[in-house]
Length: 68
Image 1 (cartoon, rainbow, N blue to C red):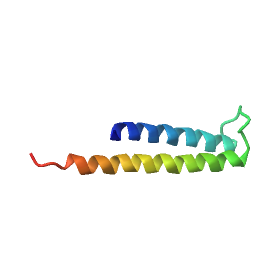
Image 2: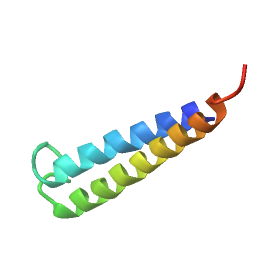
Image 3: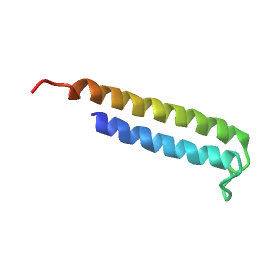
Image 4: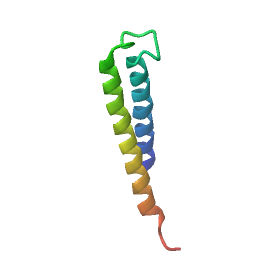
């Protein structure tokens, strides 16, 4: 479960970074290029992706500390 959550978080983070880059005009060639709205949408996606990744990491830490 946590591996899947980490993968989904990483995909959302990467897509958000692309959206933000297009919104700022760093990645040309799209209708999103140069439109600041997409920067803010991408920034929100980056935050959600980081939160999912942190949640997966925290869930993994709690389970991996078992006594042998």
